Length: 269
Image (cartoon, rainbow, N blue to C red; front, side):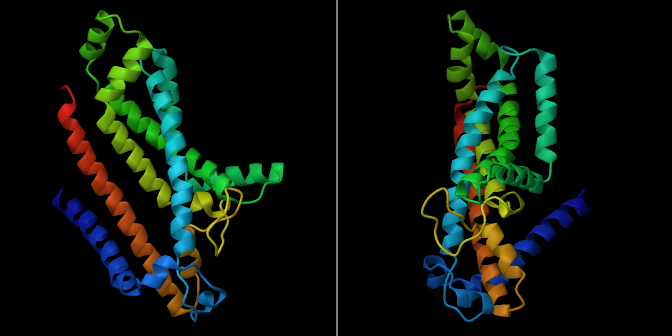
């Protein structure tokens, strides 16, 4: 147990340490507020990665919101009050399989549909790919949180005349809110750090997208593109983007812990 813990912690420290060591010195004001230029790809430009930062937010925030509404609806329906046990077990199995599918398959699936209907890579198709990726994660997390709600609490609501729908939306949802919030933030963190699902669907652009039909860069795809460069200066920009991405993911994790701890005070156990 001690050895396993040491391996995990040391791996995490090494990964974060390497990113901070190479990425922190490369962070400048221009990196954060400017978009790339053609000279950046040969290590001689003075542009930044604003396009990727904005692109990541434009992709992951709408995808997480859509995945949340779809996920909470599915999770509430899977409870014994609404669906049969065998059906809910089957759906949970499918969701677990979808959770384990490599994210690039979601990108390939959306890419094939894009080819079939003649649509090019854009913010919209990237959002759809990330939504499909996040739905099983958020749904299963919410489902497990709802299953932990005491049965006596629901029975008390029924005894007061509440319907199944009212109990699910007003009582169960509020009781399971800390777990729901943690699941949403977990899906958000997974979505903002994924490159494979948006590699074919969101495209790449040096500019901040003007509409949902324009292609956009994201931090993961920009890191992939810059790390492939033979120029050391370009790879330094990749480390800078990786540093920003790590900071965002760490902030999401910290916020998730703090908010979950705060709302757990109001949960009936």
